[in-house]
Amino acid sequence: MSLYQTCHNFAYCRFLIGFVFFFWSIIISTAHCDEQVANTTGIETINTILNQARHPYLLHGDIADQVANLQKLYGLSQNRLIWFKGGTEGSTVYDLLSLLGSAPEHGLKAEFYDAEQLRQKWSDITEKHTASEVDLTLYDVALNIALLRYMSDLHFGRARPKGLTINSSFTLPDIDLAERIYTSAQTGNVSVHNENLQPNLPGYRNLKLALARYRSAKAELGDLPQNFKTPLKGDQIADLKQLLTRLEDMAEAVPEQPHESKNKTNRLDKPLINGIKNFQKRHSITPDGKLNAKTLNALNIPLSDRINEIELAMERFRWLPQLNETPYIIVNIPAFQLWGYPSLTLSGEAQPMSMKVIVGESLDKQTPVLISDMQFLQFRPYWNVPPSIAKKELLPKLRSNPDYLASHDMELVNGFGPNAAKYGVNSQTLSQLGQGVLKIRQRPGTKNALGTVKFVFPNNYNVYLHDTSSPKLFKRERRDFSHGCIRIEKPQELAQFVLKNRPEWDEKKISLAMHDSSPKQVQLKQPIPVMIFYSTAMADPDKVTFFEDIYSLNAPLHQRLNDEKQYVAIK
Image 1: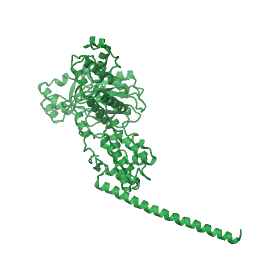
Image 2 (image 1 turned 30 degrees about the vertical axis):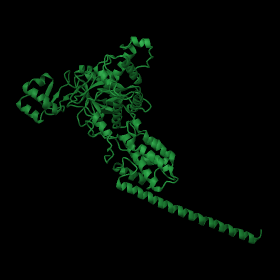
Image 3 (image 1 turned 90 degrees about the vertical axis):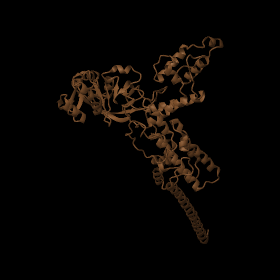
Image 4 (image 1 turned 180 degrees about the vertical axis):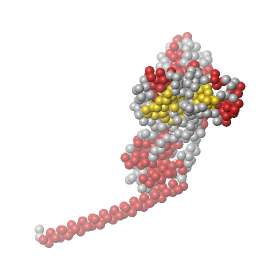
């Protein structure tokens, strides 16, 4: 090859390379301009939605409740779309729609998250050959609104506790929902939305299982009241067996032969009686196997009502805090029951300690719903009589009987400290008692209303757990007899439970302290969460138990939970 040819070829290569770079720069410049135009369109669309606080795609279009979260979310993405990076990524959208559609598994309604509306709109978009930037932006924002609402409801509850419980002062730690959605979109892991959002208490997972079982039973048996009456006759006995079998209170019945059913028309056989007993246990009825009025009433309640109770219970669990691996105590007011769990494990848990409790009277002395940490217990405690009881109940008795305090091991004092001065009962001291200057306390002993020990967790209501000098009341089925504090059936067992991390306090030492004559305060090595809450349904892995709504709190919660206007700037 000559020098000329070499130089010519080299010049041609330089020209060709230069042309390619020039052409590529034009393509890049054009694409960048298109991206800028598209991004500008998207920004304008997002800003319009945020400024108007409304979305045209959604049935629940007033989005004032989520404007702040949306602003943060699109700030994280620099005003780029969250779920659409290069077109209509269908698989991710279908995953998100499936997530929203799973809301009923948690006792929530999918329509509150526009699940069907978004599914239909996505179908309309995908039918087009090309989706416009405005279409994708509108859909991206709509998806995120629905996700924010669903995630918030799953974690905090759809209905806020305020006005629905005796006490609504407790709050859940805040979580960054916008950050969660952004991270999920970046990693492509849609399931992150559910992780650590739903309650981690085993009772919640068990209620989910119970909800599925009851919905399945309703689909099979229908929802009309059974209208069972005594004496039951042939068809009703068959219907009762079918109901109890479907609710897993009795084993699958062996079909009777025609000649057998004629001879057993009005008989309750042993499997059926056992099934009735199991049903009674699950509905807080004395399990005697008899079809009394209370049992018939429970049998005739439509399955939809029971489903509603389970949904309300799941909502109330969402108000409780997420727990770490720590012992904790739950008191369910309408169940008149306390459970102590040695630890929380997501894969299962040890058998909890349990005992009966007595709670506040339903009329005007209701036990408050609250969450606090137990910090110490007091053996042989004084009972410091609350001012309301001293004025309303004891002062009238003292005016008619000045010896009332002495006969009940009580004393009139100027304070509740160890060096409090004591006073005799006369007109002057009674006047000071009425003014709140003097106080009443009851000395430790067999007459003491708190019994041998009380368990203290600071709260604004001066409520605590304690022993009682009237254990006979634990034999009653309905146990709302107190002034608000919670009397416990097995005080020594609870003391052993909370002092487990202090090995020097063994069973013998605890027993001695409970029967000693002098008060003694013992600090816990680690505070124990105490959750006093209200639910008319509780579930184990294999069964759900229902309780009477003693404080009539279900109806207002049901109304709030199903309020179509719930999302109008309340969160």
